[in-house]
Amino acid sequence: MPSFFAAEALLPGGWARDVRIAVDEAGRIASVRPGAAPEGAERLPGLVLPGIPNLHSHAFQRAMAGGAERRSPAGQDSFWTWRETMYRFVALLTPEEVEAVAAQLYVELLEWGFTAVCEFHYLHHQPDGTPYADPAEMALRHLQAARAAGIGITLLPCLYRHGGIFGKEPAPGQRRFLNDLDGFARIVERCREAAAGDAQAAIGLAPHSLRAVTPAMLAAVAAMDGPIHIHAAEQAREVEECLAATHARPVEWLLDNAPVDGRWCLIHATHMDAQEIEDLAASGAVAGLCPSTEASLGDGVFPLRDYLAQGGRFGVGTDSHVGTSPRDELRQLETSQRLALRERAVATSEALPHPGRLLVEAALAGGAQAAGRPLGAIAPGMRCDLVALDPEHPALVGRGGDALLDAWVFSGQGNPVQEVVCGGRRVVAAGRHARREEVAAAFRRTMRGLLARAGA
Ligand code: NGQ
Ligand code: ZN
Image (cartoon, rainbow, N blue to C red):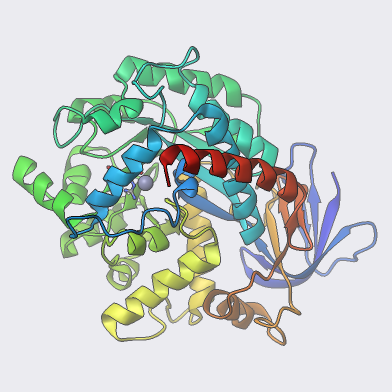
């Protein structure tokens, strides 16, 4: 493996100059030396950050992005009407199509600076609900797509059994998602076999939500190994239904009834009261925030200021992929706070007065924790995942360090990500993924076919 050289890099202790990063055969960082000479190393231009983990993806939804915006005949569009559209779309997808869509998504994520993805995967079965010959067929398509793109992946097979809290019968549109615990365990086992020995892949667990599993199922999943991701408290209606069924709010219920700790990632956690904010922060779990999707679906605004004041951990994901950039997720996260609170520079502290810096560091730490893989820092033992921002880009020119991060997060529409290294391999050079054209050609064919079949 090559060594890399960065004129300016964000290390765990802060900014450093002339940093030489050696990589071992497995794609891990072997050593990091500031104040070193560049000879013999591959130079990364500009300012180098650790690659950012994306902690929440439903890859197939990339094919729906922008395609579910029409007012329905009855009006009153919401998350729930979007979900009906999504269920109709889900019925169309073949394994080949899912793989082509996922590959396109993963190439895009890399080009924007995400170097790892947590794939929350529930589209398991054939359209009528029958498992494929290999019950993990669909899951393994995502692993294939990640390998083709060269992105790291935490594959999170999802347990989905019910259609509402607790134990409601599922709807026909949910057939492709459904498993009992045994079926789920078989898929997890197949995924573990397929990922064994692959330093770029890990397997975790995704009980979908309190709407999809019973407390007993949740306890069974919690007894298994790996990071645990669960959707919680995204919609106000979900909070009301949970209160009616359990006399507790979703985050409150989880904190009281499940062993929520640093292994857990609560996706969205949008609707929390003051006690839940305090308790979630104290639990050590990560809040998995997906600002562009949460805005798109009309979920609500995450209480970031209060959560940060309690020391809460978070990372970002792109979920339905209406956005595919860490920059856009972090920008939307902060600007939504500004709109709601009528303040500025919300995601800051006395120690970290630049929101760009605080947001990037939080996304690195929280994302790495949620991914359950050694990444998120330029330090020995971590995956060698690096993102170089072009210092000559008009949005960044003349700035360095924290000021450059602010400029990246809060200004411009273009993409200043110039080079991306993932697992020690350079996958994006001069802003372009090595396989961009080939992957995009398959994606275009797939989209045309899908949209024709959807009658769109
Ligand atoms: C999902 N997406 O699983 O894809 C969900 C919708 C649900 C978001 N929550 C389905 N953004 O939560 O029931
Ligand atoms: Zn989700």
